[in-house]
Amino acid sequence: MSAPASAVPATPPRATPLRRFLRAFASSHLAMAGLVAFTAIVLAALLAPWISPQNPYDLMQLDILDGRLPPGAVSGTGMTYWLGTDDQGRDMLSAILYGLRISLLVGIASALLAAAVGTTLGLFAAYAGGRIETALMRLVDLQLSFPTILIALMILAFLGKGIANVVLALVIVEWATYARTARASALIESRKEYIEAARAMGARPMRILWRHLLPNCLPPLMVIATVQIARAIALEATLSFLGLGVPVTEPSLGMLIANGYQYMLSGKFWISFYPGLALLATVVAINLIGDHLRDVLNPRRQVD
Image (cartoon, rainbow, N blue to C red; front, top):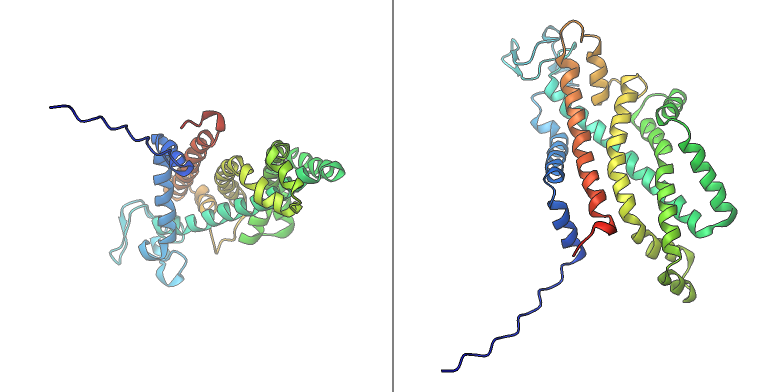
């Protein structure tokens, strides 16, 4: 009996860019750990009103007699304070969950707004060229020559406390990084054949900017945005610790750390320690994601 003719093996389908990206990102255990940790932090912040033992900013739920209780203490009403309480009797676990909401809001909002402003100006500078590009880049150089925290402090000293003011200050100190990166990427892309073809076909400048240049400039901007979220959260915590960030009525993690600083030497470490630990975990998780995202989106390191 003759053997059946062997079938020609089918060529395996080529992986899509999205599948290659997900596969490369999932190859790092540290990046996946950071993603899981950050997802858990975001979910905890979003669900804070439902999972917190108390509303730490509802005066009807607070008792000053429960102030500065150590972790694991039980109040007279039978409530267990797993992370202790602050000087006003607020449950630290609940305060941290609510504080995460403010810190994440400020960090993500400022990073996205700064990305929008900086990317727009950077792309416009690269496409316009000439004096417009020179003027915008000199403004970027001037912005980046000053310490970030100093500019933010000056802006908030003038505007005053408030979440909106903190976001505005962080946008002002962060936009220049996006502008420089977007301009550098756009200059490389604008010399390629597909841009020349679009111009020859009569495409409008705005269409070239947003339809052709922007998508090809996104990878480095995505990496910067990820890192800037962590940086903005840390900056907001610093500003709040110095008394120029969010108001006391809407405290972030930085404000919680500042509230317990004066009690550190008296042994009441938990008032600052646990919010600081939450801040550290958030920043480290985001940085782990951003660090591996930089490697994944680097064209020189991408493999099929």
